[in-house]
Length: 228
Image (cartoon, rainbow, N blue to C red; front, side, top):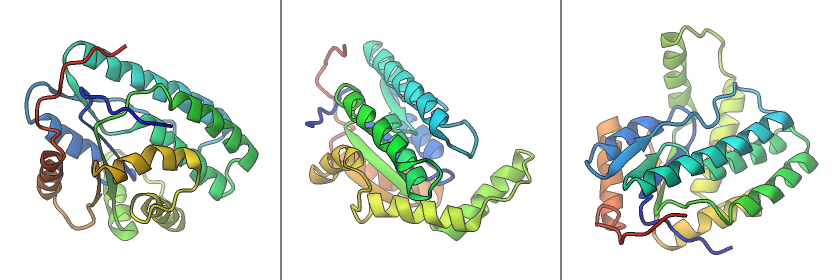
């Protein structure tokens, strides 16, 4: 599958929940026109994902793609804190890895996802945010308390997810061809940044991201294009 990067879709941010994706997204979007932060709760369906949930996720990433196209048609450059089709492929693969969903169900789902992947919009650059389990657990604990949630998050499960994501983003250890086909082109063309936020401040992460986007030419004007 050959990826065509969408000129008016500058960057998407992916990575573990709680690493600071939305904060970084808003910081990049604040650079000015025509950047626009796109808010979309792609995977806000609770902490348990099952086969039925995957079908809902498919609807959601297609809705997100439609919203991205709408922004492009209006002359805005969407900056997203979820790269829908990639994030869902990773969630599905992880659920199969830990035995939450049958492998055959996930394989069938990812086969359809690979078909969708041929027609969705791809950002010009991809930033993956990672964070050490202990730092992430503390951030999520504080966030839960602020939101009135007291249910503790399993440390073992959280560490497993962090290791799974680092395998993809840092070591290029892809659990499924669908994920490799999406991530590899970004790494091969220098359009990928792995950003560890374990100790960095939001301001520091933003400066690092902006420097990367500058090197990748993302802040330079893109050639006009009509998005279908």
